[in-house]
Length: 277
Image (cartoon, rainbow, N blue to C red):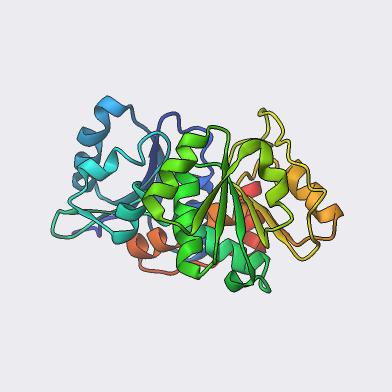
């Protein structure tokens, strides 16, 4: 008697104990009655390629990739999506039936899906977006905002050269703003996005004056610990629609889960509650 293979997936990072991805994907596997599993995989840089190439032989159909491996996997994958090339990082691997490894980046998709769900009346065409930070998450978000049709992206980073490098790469739609001048850009922005770790539990606060903030501006933070960051609390007190960072994590998992397990999962309040535990 032959037994059907149980599809496996996981998340690769170093360290990995903090990741909410296993809770997210196990909830979906349970909810849709899929006989599969999703596990955390703590993998050092030196072992990354050996582990990734071994996973398909062990029954894995794919994996998520998190810090610090999101750029390294581009050198290992056989095929890269246009999005992964443009962003310069991958967070989702698909192990294909022909043995090839396909790498994709779903962070921008997750960000936009979360924004649309949390602020359905926001329109890309309404005006500039102020993006705080110029790291990997900012790259994915800038690409997604530009694709959506945001006319101008005001980019502020604590080290200006890093922001200038993104402008050189992504073009004149980006206007670099000095970190100390970011508060002046608040009045211009129709969307404010914090992609830094400032305001996260255990990190310093994001010191940004919201004096010029309009109540029509949507404010979002990719941090989800705490769920309501000081930035979101202050913006909400001024009457703004705010969008927390948990939804980005949930939505970015949708395309990978669908490719691995053959079912497109839903992001709803029950899922949020389950992941928050």
